[in-house]
Length: 382
Ligand code: GLN
Image (cartoon, rainbow, N blue to C red; front, side, top):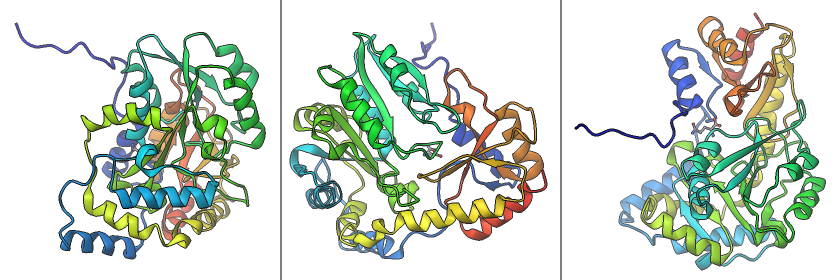
């Protein structure tokens, strides 16, 4: 007999980000698909990592993360969200935000549990749920503003609902949770056993004078939450795969049981560097403004094109409708964009389990202006 695998994810292929990035490379296209910057990160931070390595900070740090880094994160949370977090019992450093979300779901889910997921949803959520034997219950966001229909959410709640995943600023749409959404969420989960997994990796990428409403600001929500963050998205170093999760002590204790036998502890020199760089508040406070400039630059450059911009108030992403250009399905259109137009984008249908088609593609504008300019010139030819 030969070994065989009974797949835990039989319906899952390769993530759309890898597929599109590989195609972009193959066709030498400008890659506005996968969300990563093409400009340099702050050299103060990369120098701090080099110093940490050269100063011998190369062995394991504490499995929950370097204590000084956790303390600095707690200070940041206090100043931004006016919430007191205990760095010893409520913060764990993780290899990226995606890992933090996966670990949170693995910590709480049992076979048959249900998790509410808003679609379009970041493509790891549903596989993360299903690999734990649980069931994703998709709720569509309302097109074209991608707001939440809370009545619909209420209808989807059952005695098996274990968690609800929220994501603001939202990937792929750039929509934000509003005060009315927070109130609706508070009403919905009050007196229930429902956990909240809050994906806040784009917390600083908020535009148009809007505010990021972190779950950490609301004690009645935080008490049932795992809140996930990313240093990669904040400091333009997505390849570092460094993030963290914040949760109340009882939940974090269980989270760490999963984490300790999976990752154990994260890259040490980067943690020493981040602990120091978190002191430079302007580095994250200025982020929204600088990314907003990029969004506006791209919007302006795309004005003559036949694409129609949808609203984006945060994140790295701008959605465009191509309804005025083609009737193709989103994946086919994105394929043709890479091959014939020389620009890579992500079909938003990839963020729906059922493959919803709205003739919308996602562009990442976290790029140099010259990259955005070149891409827009090509897209204007369509
Ligand atoms: N978060 C990034 C995006 O949405 C990609 C991350 C990844 O490729 N796993 O494009």
